[in-house]
Image 1 (tube, helix red, strand yellow):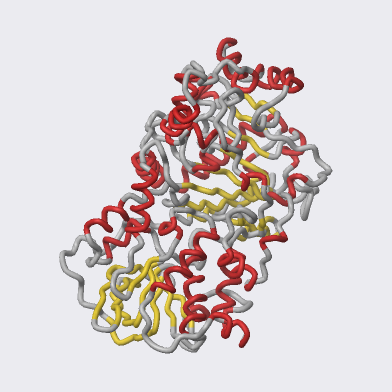
Image 2: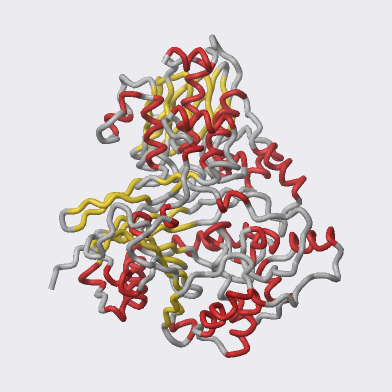
Length: 579
């Protein structure tokens, strides 16, 4: 028997509202003082890196910049993962995976930024999954015995959007394999095949408002008459796009992403979201490549080699990145800003001319006493759902090839979805089932499937996720992979070589949710939450209430432009032409 080697890499990010010194009524005296820079950036994610980029353009390439981040890696929600399997090194991502919305959601600002990194958003091509593959791999659904009384794998692609009469028999055969009672199967199939729910009793304006104020779960229960068991098939289907379960997502949004039940529900001027059909730009390690390119652009000394503390925080660098450093206080002082941070149990103080906060919005009131009540309230309402990406290195992926599946969604099991690495699905770099492969397993707790307030729901999910140990994740990986692939003779102990657990307490930056928010009030909250405070401005995706990389860049450019002038400034085009 081949010896199993499982290396747990539990990279749990800190909770967004945790300040190690928040219990103290007055700021502690700093143990180390005297460091001075031009700009302190709180947060070394993509928005923080872009902030340094735009600061150099405005104030000159010799500006002294310090980025502080509580994490132990650069890139925020990006993370490069390297897994070793019997002499093979597999590179993958543990956070943000791709640049989405490359056509419809990219401003001229973000396009220019990415172009300067060597990334042309207009060059995006259709997903590799649409290219020819030597294996006819399909999607599947795994029903677990704890929820459904038996473990069953149903192979078949999930129908996309509205379907035609020619799809009827295929859908009936697919749904017919579900472990439901006959009447439940018929009700589920009707969502694709029937036109009986029209909402025709409502005029067009009222119909739209109804769908905005009704959750997808309620729409399925009340308008379609599905029972709770049948509706649970769709509870976690919304998480991949919206980060929240079906009870927290407006039915109108689900209509726009192609979920079933809307065949005969007409809403004037409402189309499918364009970005769903736009090509992505992917890298093997996800957006960690983008973060690395941005870092090399702002500090050439980091080009190539390992990003260790000595390289990132070298005194020779104009841009220094200091990791494992938790900011505990930001304070405006005469003609500058003081920033205190905790590192290795001691408090350090750095003084700067400017400060840009590019971290989680909810943390800011804990570390910036000057925040006013209205802004404090607005920041507190930015609640983001958690997510856990578990990357599993397999010695081979023969079981997937034998079953003919590329992924398996699970309405009731611990992981709501697992999928093969993209390079395999597209028949790219590794298309031999006997070669090692990476599998992604996604975990996102749903504590109360009926909770409609996404803020309360997300907070409960965070607590549940961080009550789960690394060993719990390891056991769940072995159990779920074993059940799904077991009919092929798959042996978890023989085949699983390494496991990387990547927990994120705050992921999708929430856009307006019409179940709980009034759009106009929400827009005002967004503007209030990012007001400059003295010589400190606010970047980060939370300040734009949109979680994509383009928003991180747009927020950085805005935050730098909002900084008060403190010296000679250089025009963007002059800097660009000089490089």
